[in-house]
Image (cartoon, rainbow, N blue to C red; front, side, top):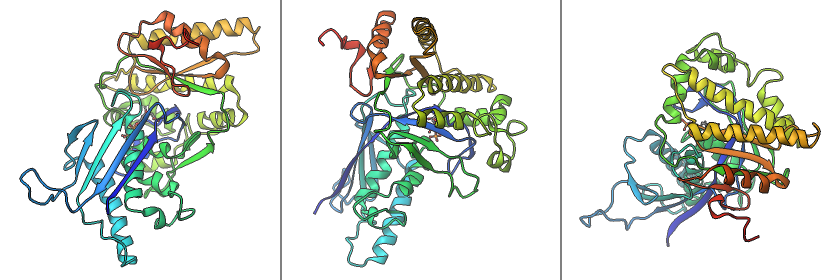
Length: 395
Ligand code: DP6
């Protein structure tokens, strides 16, 4: 019998940004965050995990280690704390399962082979670690049949999403939000053991079907400063980040971050405004908060010593184009609408533009007219339309 499972997990793009950890091992954040999970037909990670006693080394002797391939290239698992932690936590759960169920197939001690593919540029600020660790955790859970075992499992036939989400968080913080569809908050929590630092679906994928995400690839190159390294440099040095988290100064003690409630988590802060806008399907407020939040995140990156610059000239030209477009929309509607497009940038130069269905065509046409997209394409994550392919000409 073959013991193998394949899982696909979607990318999520934050509109309230996670940036900074108060615990770097458990990935406990310094502020809460909120994201939109994209349609997994376009941007996703697909991961297959297999446990097999028949795996052999190159010399024909039995395999004695786990192996992992990312986009066809083998990665070293030993020494990569995140992969090791994810795999060892899932294996420990399977061991426990086998102990409680003596007739279960002995899988925990078998070597693993894992292959994962991203449908988009890896590590270019398009949330590859979010979908990657979500898919890895879910594939191992399916392989090890942990859905029947984890205590929070809602029913034997379903994957236990909240428990899986916390396990995925330990691979990459933002991965905890990729195990749920729609609009997902990640509450920072206050406990030192991370039990209350968890993702929570605030509205499902059917809530706001008009909402689209247009992906603009300004550069597919790997980013110079990883999110993990960049955010901890920010925590250690940025006074603006301290204000964002409600702590007295950069590098405050962990307890201060756990209880600190600043610009994001404080009363009437970004989290509260954004949740409310989504629940009310209020695009004007959604757009205003999302763009302000993207701006503040990049300001915090620049406030880091030495400064971190993720956006490039093309990114800033997209900001100008969207700003001009919104001004035009406000004029056209005599102020009835303030915004028709909302840009957001993660730790890289690529833009994600949120817009409502009725405006998507015009926005893609505008972006196509203004940008040659030499290195990539604008891509509507809900319809799969590629700007590079001039999607509207044959429609
Ligand atoms: C800018 O989740 O990649 O995309 O927890 O160290 O793996 P680690 O960081 P990661 O950081 C994502 C940062 C962000 C904002 C966000 O997605 O909320």
